[in-house]
Length: 342
Image 1 (cartoon, rainbow, N blue to C red):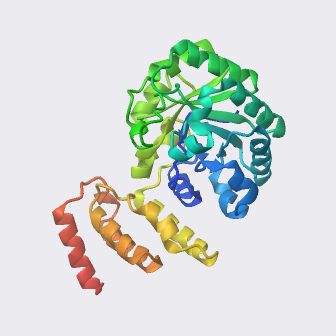
Image 2 (cartoon, rainbow, N blue to C red):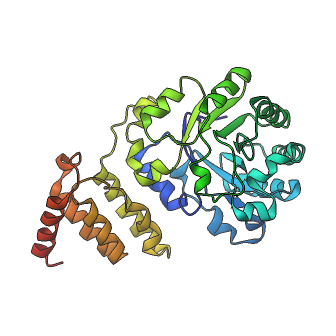
Image 3 (cartoon, rainbow, N blue to C red):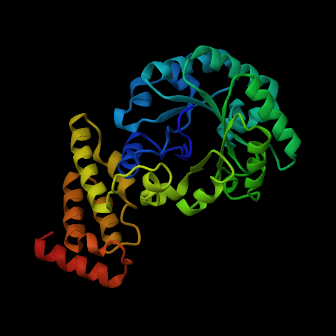
């Protein structure tokens, strides 16, 4: 099934291939997921743009959304042919689009249909098929109902369950569904006890590596979402503390330099610079001159802007990395830019 001890959640308009490459500069072991991709987009849309990824991104899963067993099975086949290590079915998205077309969390109201979909997907590919699901719908779920769904989906051939540990409230926005109702990670812990042969991954509200390690005492894996997007260096110690890899963690500057080389390569492929740079805005969050870093990238939006920002941060050096950003750091940065004629 692969290593699911720590993964980065699929996030729409966030976890594209550029952000995934950034995360891979921080951690080699963490499992990555694509943005949610609707099956019809895979079948009829710009397939190469949607599915292309670099080899460095492995292990990598393709998350699909849809409600038709036939089209989802075909989209899964295409994903496998592109080289993805896992195909994931979204059973958690509560967006208006999901409600209009009947995919995502809405499918939890019809577990028989979900089982039919999963059997088709499992039968179509050799790589593992997993699900990412909510505890239930509208806050009325019970643990026995959740366990019954897991049992039914496992009978369809699924062995990996990523459970966002809260209900989906279809009357609320997607943002509010990330905040309420309260999380119930203990239900996911109980699932692992009741289904020891399955891989159970908990998701929702985990902000630090320390929190993830606490959950790993109970479940097989933890999926972290927005905390990583807000600061990719949350994963800095993941390879050592979670995966036991001896490699020295990269510093923020080393990650930034690696992304500079990546941007140059991507621009040669025709990628607009901002497609990459937008993911780097928080790389120096709460660090010396971090606000100036964001300002330079936001205003310049090109390779030259990144070079200026790198020069600014390199003057601080690695020793300054653990200091907090503030007015003094910004003033010093402005003086630096003035000296450089920027």
